[in-house]
Image 1 (cartoon, one colour):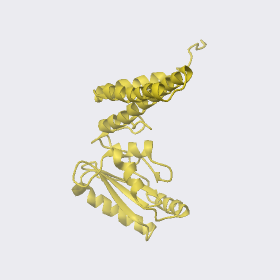
Image 2 (image 1 turned 60 degrees about the vertical axis):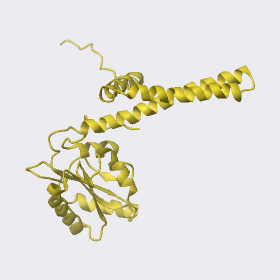
Image 3 (image 1 turned 90 degrees about the vertical axis):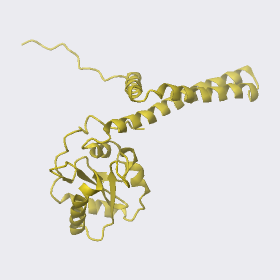
Image 4 (image 1 turned 30 degrees about the vertical axis):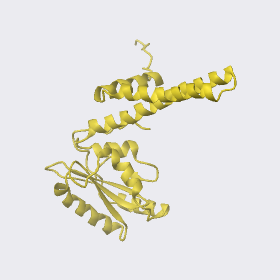
Length: 231
């Protein structure tokens, strides 16, 4: 029997990953290069000015310039990361299952949620997702209010049936009035005021898991492959 001599494929290095992110983001955001250049030049110019004004020696001047260059590289990377995140959200916007992908990739610590929707409309494929945190239970509707209101009302009744008196909030992701964008999900969750203790969050989450399992992710997006860039 022939023995395989092939080595397992190595994961791309950090530099290669940054280059891939830059290339993909530039295709969506042609102004990326100019924003990164501006972010790089500002700290460098500040370092040069401080080298002439604050440095008391040649070594001090060199150090200020080096600090400015390092800060410029860091600022450029931060700008690239922010705009790459926006580009990722823009590619996912409007796709079925996008909310699940965001919850799977970026849901912050202290929240319990899943990329699997708790309800899906068989006709329109609109979906409702659920997250549990100290503000209570948050139902996140993916689709217009007119089409998702019935799904939200049904899920609200289910939550109250197994966890009475639990605070319930509703977020809607879409393009209609009063809705939020994909990139605003975590920000909107963070703005909700805490009302439960951590022990109560765990208890409510366990009770909700006793309900019927989630339904399959709607066709249109694979949350295991498409995800926003982490900061």
